[in-house]
Image 1 (cartoon, rainbow, N blue to C red):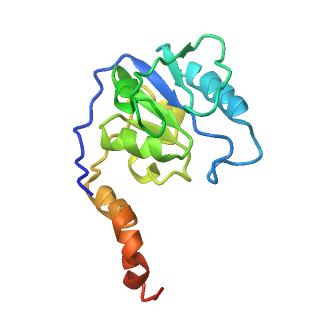
Image 2 (cartoon, rainbow, N blue to C red; image 1 turned 90 degrees about the horizontal axis):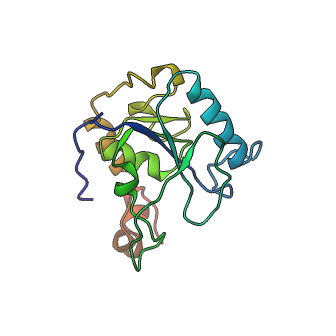
Length: 170
């Protein structure tokens, strides 16, 4: 897939919370994204004084909790979500995400991640807030290999290759 792990980094000053859509299939229906965001920011405040930057999902507004700032991502013309995630991760000490693809992207980019145990990034991320000032940054090599083997390109899907790989026919 052409993915390359960037070295872990901790040069940033703030924590960026990457909010996902409330209608995502991975999102728990028992809590709204606004409630989750509020709880996350309140929990983080127990363990850090760092600036908390909130990057809403590009297609879903959220209410920014008091004491947090709204991320101002760079716009990218003619892209699916019209924002630059790499720009949002610049200056980040760590990222927080419930369990969506931006958490995986943060880990690949070398930004320490805090996420829910249900996240596909959880094996190489942090799930306990009290580690926010000393995030774990494990080797991600095997994780990237395993997660890459569960992804398919559009061209591969069009040919039926994934189904054939599992012994199924079209």
